[in-house]
Amino acid sequence: MSESRSGVPLGPIAILAGSGELPVRLADRLVETGRTVRILAFRGFCERRVKARADAVVNLLDLSRIIALLETWRPAAVTLAGGLTRPSAAALMGAYSAYRDREHVAAVIARGDDNLLRGAVELLESRGFALAGVRDLAPELLAEGGLYGAVVPDPAARLSIERGFRMLEALSPYDVGQAAVVSGERVVAIEGPEGTDRMLARVRSLTRGGLLRRRKSRGGVLVKGPKAGQDLRVDLPAIGPRTIVNASRAGLDGIAIAQGLTLVLDREATVAAADRAGLFLVGVERAGLTDAADD
Amino acid sequence: MSESRSGVPLGPIAILAGSGELPVRLADRLVETGRTVRILAFRGFCERRVKARADAVVNLLDLSRIIALLETWRPAAVTLAGGLTRPSAAALMGAYSAYRDREHVAAVIARGDDNLLRGAVELLESRGFALAGVRDLAPELLAEGGLYGAVVPDPAARLSIERGFRMLEALSPYDVGQAAVVSGERVVAIEGPEGTDRMLARVRSLTRGGLLRRRKSRGGVLVKGPKAGQDLRVDLPAIGPRTIVNASRAGLDGIAIAQGLTLVLDREATVAAADRAGLFLVGVERAGLTDAADD
Image 1 (tube, rainbow over the protein chains, first blue to last red):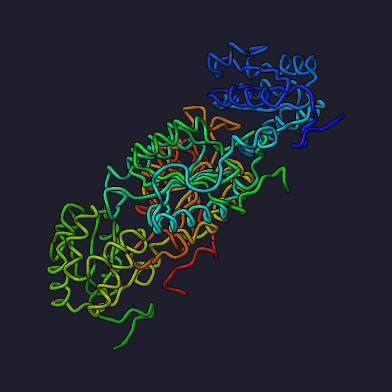
Image 2: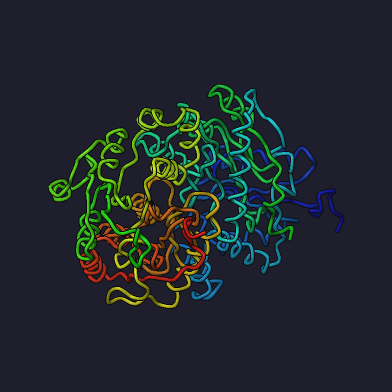
C-alpha cells in the first residue's frame, strides 16, 4: 500500500470523535489534503456540528459496535480526537471485560490514565487497526515554537518556565503532571487527574486564601506538555480559550506549552483571549518530553 | 558551655509557640528532662492552655518585641513549635523590612516556603540565637518506624508507599510536595501550598466526580515526609487525628510517614482514629528524605 509523506497509508481515516472542535478541525484538514474521512462520534461527548457530520454516533462503551463499524470501514488508520471525560471504573470494567479478562482490566485501571489509553490502543491494534495521531495526520495543528500573541515573557517568567518543565520531566516516570504552575522559583501546583482547569482554580483559591504570596498582584506561569510516557497518538495535551481565561483568573502572567507536543484549540480565539487578558503564550522546545511511540 | 547528649547546650529553651498541642507536649518533655522552658506564644495561633502557660504572648509579626524578649531571656536555643497559618505577603513585607531590605524580602517570598522559613532562621541566627528543632530536643515525639495501629498494609499498599516516596524524592529539588496520594501505581495528587487536608479533600472530590477509578470502593495511600531541602528545625511535617479523618473521607487505605522526620500529633487519638476508620498507619525509613541541616 502506498503511503502519504507523513507515513500514514493512503485510504480513509476513521476519526473517533470526542468533545471540542478538534474532530472537525482535523476532518477539515484531512479533506483539504485529499483524504477520505469517516467520523465515529461518541454520544454525549461530541458537539452538534460533529454529530451532524458523523457517519455513526455510538456509545463510548459499546465496543462491539465500534469494532464492527471499523471492520466495515476498513480505515487506513484510526485516530482519537477530542476530549472524553473518563467513565466510571464499573462502566469500563463492563465494557472491556468482554474482550479482556477482568483481572487484566482491573490492573490497567489501577495503573493510571496512560495505561488505560494504552489498553484501548492495544485492543484496537490487536484487532488489526493502525493507530495514528494528530501529529502524524495534521502536525500543523500542533503548537509552534515561539511567541503566539502580543505579550512577551520577561526573564523571570522564562526562568519559571524552565523550572516548571524540568520539574515535569523529573515527574515523568510517575504518570502524573501534564501541567504545573510555577510562581517565581516555586512550584505551586501540579496537575493530577482533575485536569488543568481545576488546577488553575486551585491556584486562584490559594491566592485568595493568602497561601500564595507573590511579589506583585500577578505572578506565575502555567507550563503544559505531555508526560514522558504518554502516547500522543491518543492523548495530546491541549489548551484553548478557556485555559487562557482560567489562567488569568488565577493571576498568572502567561502560559508555556511544549512545541509540537501540545494542541492549541481554536488558535485565533486563544491568542485573542491571551492578548486581551495581557497574558503571554509561548511554545517552547522540550527535548525531555518525548512520545512513547517515538521510543 | 556544657552540652546535653542531644548536642543542644544546657540552659533555658525558648519555644515560639504556634497552634496545636505540640508546644505543650514539647514543653512537658523538656521539663521532664530537667530543662528550663520559656514560652513565647503567638497571639491568634496558640491554644488556650499554651497561652495560660506562656511567659509572653506576642503578635507573630512584632519582630522587634520577639527579639527584645529573646535578648532578655538569653535562651540556650530557640525552637519553633506548632502551626502558623502563613500571613499575607504585605504583612510579611512590613514586618521583615525593618530588618532586611525590601528587595531581599521580596526575593525570599518569591522563592517559596522553605526559603521563607530559612529567611526567618537566618534573621534569628544573625542576632546570635541558636536554633534547635524538635528532633534535637525531643526526638521521641517524632514518628517511629513500623506499624502504629491494628491495621496492616497489604503488599499492593506497600508498593504504593514505595512509589509515593520515590516520587517525592524526585520532586525534592523543586520545593513542592511534602505529601502525595498514590492509588495503585498511580500518583493522583501532589501537595502544594494548600496543605495535606485540602489535598485529601481534592482526592475525595476526584472520586466523587468519577475522575479517580479504583478497583474497590477504597484504595490509595497518603505518603508524607519532609521535602529534601526542608529545615526540620523549623518546619516538620505532621499528621494528627484530623489527617486520619480526612484520609478516610478520601477513601484511602492508610497513611505512611517518614520515620524520624514526621510528627505524630496527639499520638493516642491518632492511632485510635486510624483503628476506628480501618486505616493503617506506618512509619517508613526514607534515606532519600534528609534534613538540610544534616548536609
